[in-house]
Image (cartoon, rainbow over all chains, first blue to last red):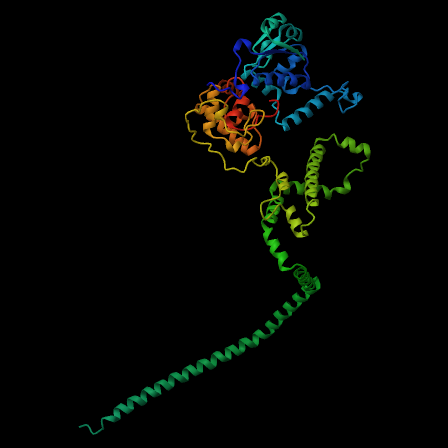
Length: 168
Length: 330
C-alpha cells in the first residue's frame, strides 16, 4: 500500500469534496434535451453528483405522452440543411424529430425515455418545475415515474448547494 | 392245358398299349389342327383391324408432325448441342459448386409471399391497358395513396439491394461471368460474400473482427488468487498513457484482483460476471461496451453497476477487464 497508485481515477474523493452539477432544461426540442441528459449521465459516470431540473418546455422531456415524440425545430436554425421557409411548414418539426430519432437508433443511442431511466438508476435526481407545471396544467401523475419530485425554484437552489449550475 | 408260349400274352399287352398311345396321339393331332384353323381364322379377322390401328397411329404421328413436335424436338436437340459445345467441363464444375446458391435463390423466389406478390403484379400487368395515363401532377397525387407509398418503399428497397450488389460486383471484375452470376444467387465457395448478408433480411449486424489474435481469455472459473501488492511495481508494462491496458490478451484474473485491491474492492461473483462479459463483448465487437450495453448484455441493472463499481462504473469495468477506455458519451 506504500507504492504510489498509477491510476488517478481509482482515488475517489471524499464525499464532501465530490463535484456536483445541477442542470436546468428549459427547452423541449429533441436536440435541446439530449445534451442535458448526456451531460448528466456523463457526470454520473465521472463520479460527479447530478440533478436535472426540467422547466417550461423542458417539461416535455419528462411528460409521459410527449417524451417519445420530441420534435426538432429546424426553422431559424442556420445549421439546418433545410431552408427556413420550408422548415416553418406544419409538421416539419415532427418530421425532423422522427429523422433524428431514427438516426440515433441506428447509432444505438438510447431514446429519451431510456436515458431518463438510466439517469435515475445512476443516482441522478430528476425534478419538475412546479410553476411551469401549473401553467401547463400538468400533474405529477402526468410525468414519467423517474421524476423524483416537483419543486420550486427556491427548492432547486437549496438542492444545488455546492453544485455548478448549467442552464440549457 | 396251356400250350401258348409264355412270351405271347406279353407281346399282346404291349401291342394293345401301343395302339392306345397311337389313339391318343391322333386325338391330340386333331386338336392341334383344330386350334391352328381357329388361329388362322382369328388372324384373318384381325388383319383389317390392325391395318385400321396402324392407320390411326400414322395419322396421329402426322398430326404431331403438323403441330410441330418433331421440329421442336429437333430444335431442342440443337439447343442442347449448343449448350454442351459452349460450356466446358470447367464451367459445369463451377455450376455444380454454385448449385446450392442457385437452389437457395429459387427457393427464395418460390416462397408463398413472393409468389403472391409476383402474381399480384402480373395481374396488374394484364389490366395495363385500363390504367389511366398519369402526368407529373398525377404522379404526385398517386404518391399519396398508401398502397403506392408501400410499393414505392418496396421498389426503393429493391433498388438499394440491386445497387449494393452491382457495386460489389463492379469491384471484383476479375471473376469470370458464371461465378459473378452465381454470386448474385448468393453462393460462394467459402461462405457468402459480405454484401449477401446485407441482402438477407433481418440478419445480425456484422461485427468487427476481434482486435487480438490471441486465444480467448479464460472467461469461466475466476481464480481468486491472492492480491498482489498494489502499486506500479505490481503492474506489467503495456499500459497506455491513459492508464489502460493496450493489449487485452495480456490480462489475467490475478491482474484484475490486484487492480481491484487498489480501489479498494473485493471482486465477488457479480463483479466477475460483469468483467467476463465485458471481455467477451470487447473480443466480439472490437470496442469497449458502454454502461447501457454492459447492463443489457451482462444482465445487471445500471443501479447495481453503480453499486458494484462505485464512482466510475464504466471506466472501472474496462480497467478491471483489461480492455481499452470506453469511448462515446454514454
